[in-house]
Length: 188
Image (cartoon, rainbow, N blue to C red):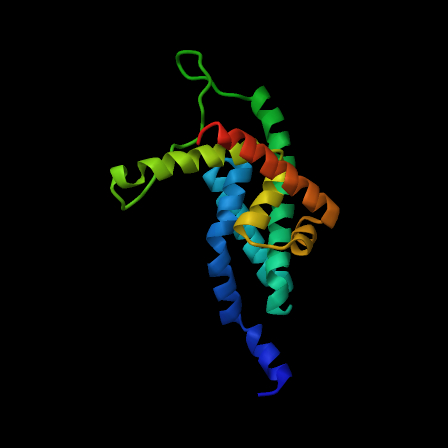
């Protein structure tokens, strides 16, 4: 098969589906940590996947990771902008229940799992604490940390995905790691 034929095969819909399936859960985790809302995180991931398919499916598969994470980052930024406006409106039109207290309005989602609780208690508590500490990081530090550590992107790919310089990636990553070490040492 010619190299042009191989490149066309690599960009097939099946390969793009495989790429999206392989990256969907990690992208969801990044979005969940950024938004704190399951439904919003799912929406962001769906939007990012659709944008990748619509606009970049014909690109080389090697370009997909950086493009996908750039789309995820931009969609998270858009979510924050919209959320800021929503919060303003909610404060004006907030609802109250019969006791005069504000209603939460968010549905509680039960956690699902197939493992025995005693098997996962320690791990679960550690992950909850780590998630909380990552959530407390400034957004850029949080996102750089997740892209570098969880997604395994290098400095250049992270910079491209976030639309910032490589020096900024290094600075944000260093600050995030330092802060996480500092706060997590207390709980080890």
